[in-house]
Length: 114
Image 1 (cartoon, helix red, strand yellow):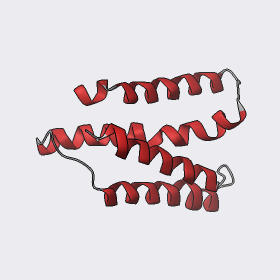
Image 2 (cartoon, one colour):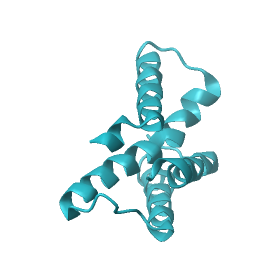
Image 3 (cartoon, rainbow, N blue to C red):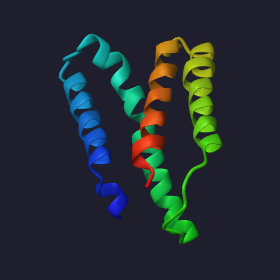
């Protein structure tokens, strides 16, 4: 549980919630609206998955390998920036989203994976 109380995880979740609430009120700040969710994706998603895997494996020291993190970024990039835009006009692929995914994953790898 202590992993979910780390300051960077709380900050990422708080920023995500604030961004979603502002968007629900039709408040759109150009670059924040476009890229903040993508930037926060991996700090939030990987922290939650790491928490669950540590519980499942009963290993409080379990860590993601660099390969696993790179695979996660590649998987999300392909699904959300290539496949979904290809199959639905509701989605748009954007290389800057992939950059934001990568930066968020790097933040997780560098500072959020104890």
